[in-house]
Length: 120
Image (cartoon, rainbow, N blue to C red; front, side, top):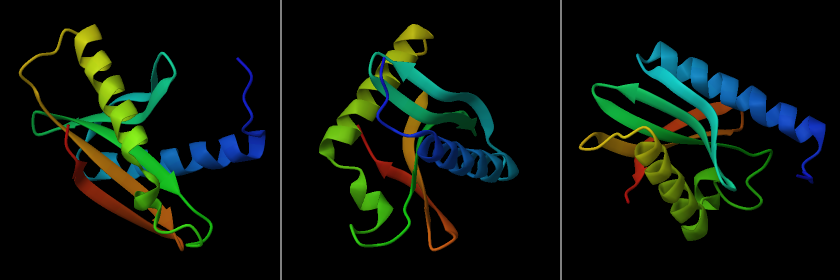
């Protein structure tokens, strides 16, 4: 598969995912998966805490020119994340488990954690 994202963008993305992972671990989450892929969909981080599986999208921006990073998660992206999460649960044969979707953003050097950012 050809990627149009250059190496520096990928490295930057991984760096923010590492920071998000460190934040979650320090807050008592257990990281289950990183960059889990289902077909053409990806979940940045999958974590667990207090018997809840948390699917985490990580977004970072250099400026607010296009709005807050959490606003960049449109309906299409939400549907893709939900579909990927459902596939993850089915693949692992997980049923009846509490789940939620969180977003961790980075802007102006600040990490912001949005718990339960959207439902399914």
